[in-house]
Image (cartoon, rainbow, N blue to C red; front, side):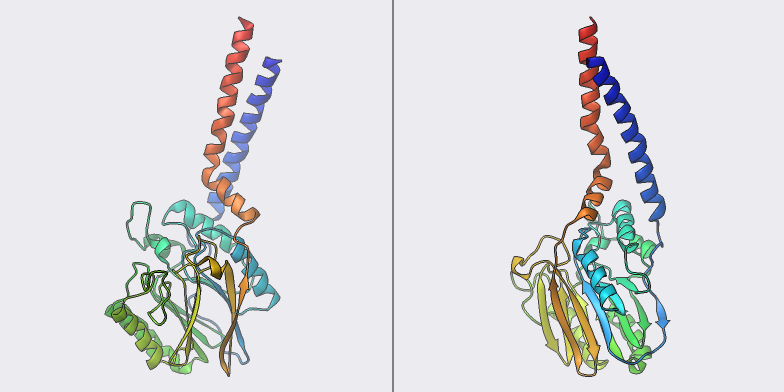
Length: 318
C-alpha cells in the first residue's frame, strides 16, 4: 500500500513539475518588454461628440476592479482606459510581466495608458529607477492624442514634481493644447487642492510642487486631472478643471469608506461629468497571480510528502 502511494506521489510530482514549468515558461515568453506599450503621439484623428474615459488607480496587481472596468469600457464604447499608476506591486521583472498579462486582457481597439506610479519605480530594496517602466511602457513623461483629446503624463513617481518636469510638460501643452478639444493631465500623485491624505497632505505633492501643476491647469485650460496614490476617492474643482482621485483599484484602502471602485468620465460641452462605480478587487485572475508568483512554494509540501512516503516504504521493507 505504501509502495503504491509512493509511486502515485512520484508520478503526480513529476506531472506537476513539468506542467508548472511549462505554464510558467509560457507566461514569461508571452509577456515580455514592449508587448503592450503605452499609446504615443496622435493615435486617432479628431472627432466630434462626447468622449468617454474609464479610469482607476492603485491596483498593485489585484485584478478584479480592472477586469470590471474593462467590461464597462466595452459596454459603453469607451474611447480610452487610463490606469493612474501602481498597476504593479513593485519594480521587478515578474511584476512587470504580470502587468503585461493584465493588459493583454484589455478590450481590443480601446487605447490603454498606465501612468507611472511610485510602485512602478521603487523596488524591494527601496531604490527608485524608471528603466523598467521605460522598457515595458515607454517614456515616463509622454503624451498622446486621440479623437482630438490630449493626454499629458507627468512623472511624480518619486513623490515630487519640479520645475524641469513642469517645463517639459509645458512644452507639449504649448504645442498641442490650443488645437485639442479637451486637455487631460495624468499624475499619479495629485496636487494639494483638498485634504486628501488620512493625516493631512502626506499623500499629495507639497504646496510649492502643487502650484507648478496647478499653474499648467490655469495656463492651458486643463479640463481634467486624473491620479491616485491615496487609496480612496476624492474630487475637487480648480479653475474649471475636475481633479479626480480614483485610488480604489485594488490595493489595501486608506479610506475603507471609499470602497474599491473605478470611474467613468465623460468629456462634453458642459464640462467633465463622472460616475463612481463600486467593484470587487479579487477573482480568479488574482488566484492566477498568486500561483505564478509563488508556484515554487506549492511544490515544497508535495516534495515533503514524497520524502515521507519514501521513508515509510523503506521502513516497511525492512
